[in-house]
Length: 116
Image (cartoon, rainbow, N blue to C red; front, top):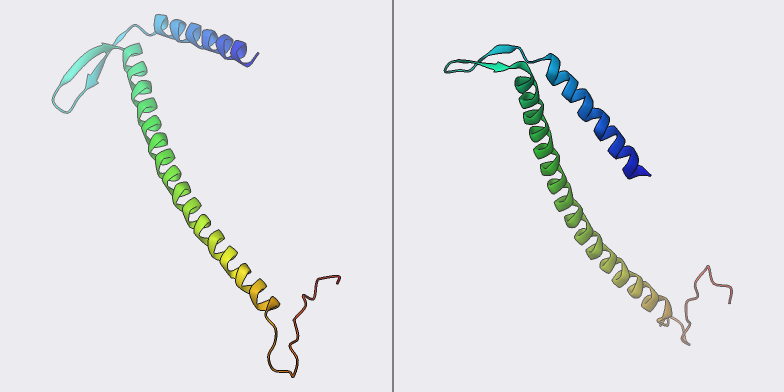
Protein backbone atom coordinates (compact mmCIF):
# COMPACT_ATOMS: atom_id res chain seq x y z
CA UNK A 1 0.00 0.00 0.00
CA UNK A 2 2.90 2.32 0.77
CA UNK A 3 4.32 1.76 -2.72
CA UNK A 4 0.97 2.68 -4.27
CA UNK A 5 0.86 5.95 -2.34
CA UNK A 6 4.43 6.71 -3.38
CA UNK A 7 3.56 6.00 -7.01
CA UNK A 8 0.46 8.19 -6.80
CA UNK A 9 2.40 11.09 -5.29
CA UNK A 10 5.14 10.65 -7.89
CA UNK A 11 2.64 10.82 -10.74
CA UNK A 12 0.95 13.86 -9.20
CA UNK A 13 4.32 15.56 -8.80
CA UNK A 14 5.22 14.75 -12.42
CA UNK A 15 1.95 16.28 -13.63
CA UNK A 16 2.56 19.43 -11.59
CA UNK A 17 6.09 19.72 -13.00
CA UNK A 18 4.78 19.21 -16.56
CA UNK A 19 2.19 21.96 -16.10
CA UNK A 20 4.83 24.19 -14.57
CA UNK A 21 7.08 23.55 -17.58
CA UNK A 22 4.30 24.39 -20.03
CA UNK A 23 3.65 27.77 -18.42
CA UNK A 24 7.32 28.73 -18.00
CA UNK A 25 8.80 28.43 -21.49
CA UNK A 26 9.87 32.08 -21.74
CA UNK A 27 13.59 32.64 -22.14
CA UNK A 28 15.39 34.51 -19.41
CA UNK A 29 18.93 35.83 -19.32
CA UNK A 30 21.28 33.86 -17.10
CA UNK A 31 24.30 35.88 -16.01
CA UNK A 32 27.53 33.95 -15.57
CA UNK A 33 30.80 35.37 -14.34
CA UNK A 34 32.14 35.33 -17.90
CA UNK A 35 29.02 36.14 -19.89
CA UNK A 36 25.28 35.90 -20.34
CA UNK A 37 23.08 33.24 -21.94
CA UNK A 38 19.34 33.00 -22.57
CA UNK A 39 17.69 29.81 -21.37
CA UNK A 40 14.07 28.75 -20.87
CA UNK A 41 12.90 29.54 -17.36
CA UNK A 42 11.93 25.93 -16.65
CA UNK A 43 15.49 24.76 -17.37
CA UNK A 44 16.88 27.38 -15.00
CA UNK A 45 14.43 26.34 -12.27
CA UNK A 46 14.93 22.59 -12.76
CA UNK A 47 18.70 23.01 -13.02
CA UNK A 48 18.78 24.98 -9.79
CA UNK A 49 16.60 22.38 -8.07
CA UNK A 50 18.82 19.58 -9.36
CA UNK A 51 21.99 21.30 -8.15
CA UNK A 52 20.37 21.93 -4.77
CA UNK A 53 19.32 18.29 -4.49
CA UNK A 54 22.82 17.10 -5.43
CA UNK A 55 24.42 19.43 -2.90
CA UNK A 56 22.08 18.48 -0.07
CA UNK A 57 22.39 14.78 -0.96
CA UNK A 58 26.18 14.94 -0.90
CA UNK A 59 26.11 16.69 2.48
CA UNK A 60 23.71 14.03 3.81
CA UNK A 61 25.96 11.22 2.53
CA UNK A 62 29.02 12.85 4.11
CA UNK A 63 27.22 13.26 7.46
CA UNK A 64 26.06 9.65 7.31
CA UNK A 65 29.63 8.50 6.64
CA UNK A 66 31.02 10.55 9.54
CA UNK A 67 28.32 9.32 11.92
CA UNK A 68 28.83 5.67 10.92
CA UNK A 69 32.57 6.01 11.60
CA UNK A 70 31.76 7.55 14.99
CA UNK A 71 29.35 4.70 15.79
CA UNK A 72 32.00 2.08 14.91
CA UNK A 73 34.55 3.87 17.10
CA UNK A 74 32.12 4.08 20.02
CA UNK A 75 31.14 0.41 19.64
CA UNK A 76 34.81 -0.61 19.82
CA UNK A 77 35.28 1.59 22.87
CA UNK A 78 32.20 0.04 24.49
CA UNK A 79 33.52 -3.48 23.84
CA UNK A 80 36.82 -2.59 25.51
CA UNK A 81 35.02 -1.14 28.52
CA UNK A 82 32.72 -4.18 28.75
CA UNK A 83 35.80 -6.41 28.79
CA UNK A 84 37.34 -4.26 31.53
CA UNK A 85 34.12 -4.46 33.55
CA UNK A 86 34.13 -8.26 33.20
CA UNK A 87 37.72 -8.49 34.43
CA UNK A 88 37.01 -6.21 37.38
CA UNK A 89 33.88 -8.18 38.32
CA UNK A 90 35.90 -11.40 38.27
CA UNK A 91 38.45 -9.78 40.57
CA UNK A 92 35.69 -8.71 42.98
CA UNK A 93 34.31 -12.26 43.05
CA UNK A 94 37.80 -13.64 43.66
CA UNK A 95 38.35 -11.23 46.57
CA UNK A 96 34.98 -12.12 48.11
CA UNK A 97 35.80 -15.84 48.00
CA UNK A 98 39.32 -15.38 49.35
CA UNK A 99 39.57 -16.20 53.08
CA UNK A 100 40.58 -13.45 55.46
CA UNK A 101 43.87 -14.31 57.19
CA UNK A 102 43.75 -11.91 60.13
CA UNK A 103 41.98 -14.34 62.45
CA UNK A 104 43.09 -17.62 64.01
CA UNK A 105 40.88 -19.61 61.67
CA UNK A 106 40.08 -18.69 58.09
CA UNK A 107 36.83 -16.77 57.62
CA UNK A 108 35.10 -16.31 54.28
CA UNK A 109 33.37 -13.07 53.43
CA UNK A 110 29.72 -13.39 52.43
CA UNK A 111 27.92 -11.09 50.06
CA UNK A 112 25.51 -8.72 51.81
CA UNK A 113 22.87 -9.30 49.16
CA UNK A 114 22.91 -13.10 49.35
CA UNK A 115 20.14 -14.99 51.14
CA UNK A 116 22.38 -17.80 52.42
